[in-house]
Length: 358
Image (tube, rainbow, N blue to C red; front, side, top):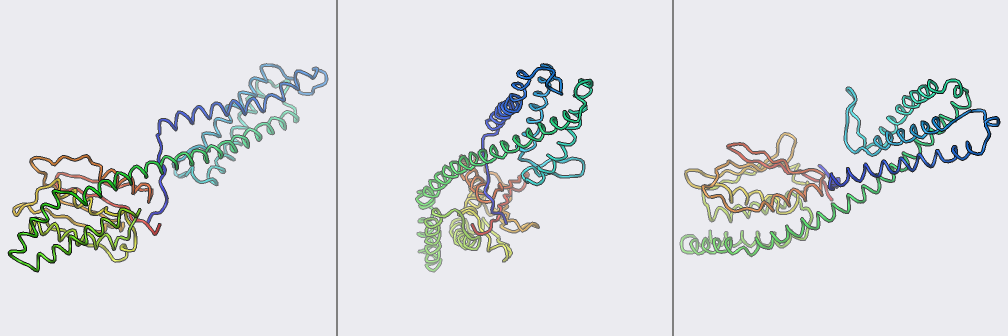
């Protein structure tokens, strides 16, 4: 359902750098446009120049350019969605920014021109001045938009580099966690004890348990090489993983899967469901009196939801939170959407974004 990459960066660093960049570039544009006029004014005598000017007027004209440049940088460097009345504006769409730029130009240019004429009415109300004033404003706007587009491209590349670095780190940590789970002595010890008990009581159940363990470890070895995997395969893995857990917990734990067939073609990060099921088992009581219920289903929006009843242990298991954190980072990178975590007194649920083929 989602397939756009996410972009993440340090907000404070970006905001600070953007402000400095806007101010310095606006100043450079002001100097670039004002310098020819200043040189011309110094060379021409008052009698040869039809539009009389002075230092105050030149300074105000430079201020107009500077302020106009800042306004257009603000418009074209926005990345969020805003509202003007009942109209929603997405600043990531170029045509919407262009429309706002045109409207802003007519309003801002008219106000600045009338203000200037009000201050210098005896000298600057000639048609020639109006033409030159408009030309300066147009050049200012064009230069600012060009610089803003370059800055947006540079910012995008910078954010992509940060995202890729973050993903590499998350993948490395996830692989480490997966490898730890593959050779987890505690998990292996409990599984061997379960096999030992089943061999003496139910040999067929012992064979089934070993086969399920084999499927679990085979999937774990295969999945850590992939960025995403079809939901159908993840559900098959969870079925085997569930049988392994039931071999240990019996009726103390129940896992219910109600996933619509249409959603099975989509993809999720590998081991995503295992991380959430393991998280539920690790942090909750599972007993005959208080069985642990885990449900995997689609909500009304066809998103994948994993929920369980909350029965917190009296002595909480130590947890670093790396599993959920890494899963969230992988979802952000692959789908541009985060996990949705909801917690109440009686339940805990996580919504996983589904992705198209990557």
